[in-house]
Image (cartoon, rainbow, N blue to C red):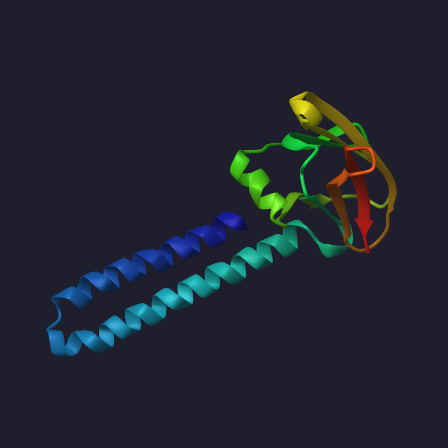
Length: 178
């Protein structure tokens, strides 16, 4: 089904190119309405593409079986993130290696979507392993886990890295968003 929509979009793009080729051959006083039609057609194709993307997301990841994982950071004095590995029920779900620019965006309040997928109802265990530089620039590797029950409806889970000033250590928390 996805290939059908891509072929349809490709056909629209060919029509646009052919139409724009004919528009160049027409005299300038008649070219304005054709140019407007071409622009309208391009806008229609872009809107159709946007709607197809949303439809594809809804078909691939229905809301009642959906699991979404997000990562956020706070402050970052005691931990410099290099990578995160996420497993669900013992199977690798996601793995990500961060650039300095990405960690800077997270420190400025950004939230990264690590994973979106389908998950059957029932009990599950999520484990996240965070790797980076800890206090004093030493290598640091910590894990956090969350046992949760997936019911009907979307499940949103946040992996949060924050500083704990009392112990001068980073804190890794996995929590469900309600």
